[in-house]
Image (cartoon, rainbow, N blue to C red; front, side, top):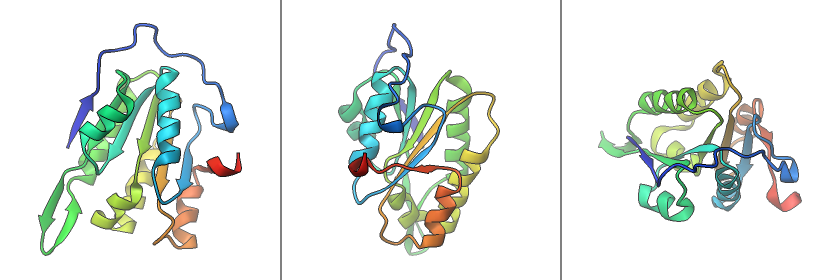
Length: 175
């Protein structure tokens, strides 16, 4: 697992959030969609406004670097290992530590899971939701935002409620 910084730092620093469509820094949002377009739009918006963004992805770091290409957008890639006949994302505990370190070292952190469903496929629903819950409910000494994109297929109403307990539902189509 590695955190990858995409380019050099923006010398102008963070700018105020536009609060377009009700999405504001300091709150957390979940999007139940089959693709990452909605969360990518929010990542771009927060990145363009100067917030420090960490994208937690099961994809490739090159994809994140090409898509956002900003100094304040980093990628935390989850390495995939083959264990006992099935794939697991290796190191949810290490991911939690890396996200907490990112939040601690940045003034206005935004953490985005670009496809939680891929992490769930490889690590299980309960373990993944427990990790996300731990991160969101952790007491930090600063404001932060979490953005989570997940394919609604495979989520029960109970699973959705676990995410919605500490996050607002963001529906870009219903804006």
